[in-house]
Length: 281
Image (tube, helix red, strand yellow):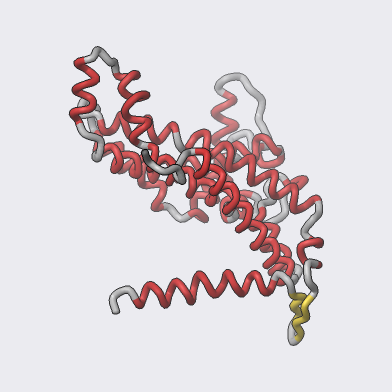
């Protein structure tokens, strides 16, 4: 009886939409008419726009993984150290961005990376004698804005995950390592990092999903699904365009299915490589 509400919501809001999306991906859906078209919708998405979106999401996911795993891990270790002053203050400050609406954050970063000479980023680089940049008109600089937004919003969340995991590591291990002459770096590499592996796997899994499902940040930064030479195009943005702007619901469903399969495959690979499926001796 207590589990039933979860089971009902899971079936209604998760399982049913996935099954329905698979069915829709093989249909041509127009108002008042639905017909089966086989793999035609999948052939339609096999174009430059889709591969551009896939490339953008892959770049974005790669850089967020590079920054949002080691940086929060190190920050968590520093905040867990008793010698760090104002630890609770720093924990709160780091977590506050996660409570900010992604729309509000996107608008703020849109202004920060504005094209005018007086925008915050152009002012900052001007102090170093560098010329003003059109940040959201360049592929590399636009990706920099997206990644910085992600790092600003999610660093505190990942720090919280690692802080929770650090509480489960026995202090006796560190004391024994100190007796053997291990320094802070040696203890971090031989004790902390290996014992944080389960949390790292979890953070890696949700980061891969979040990277490929990213949409709102790009949509706000570029004011819609259109961006110069498609530098802000994402897979979900392409799905949105096909399904809700061109009213090709079947094509949009096919994009969603492909996105699901990509994320599932990547996570299965990383879970396999990191040893989650290995049997313990």
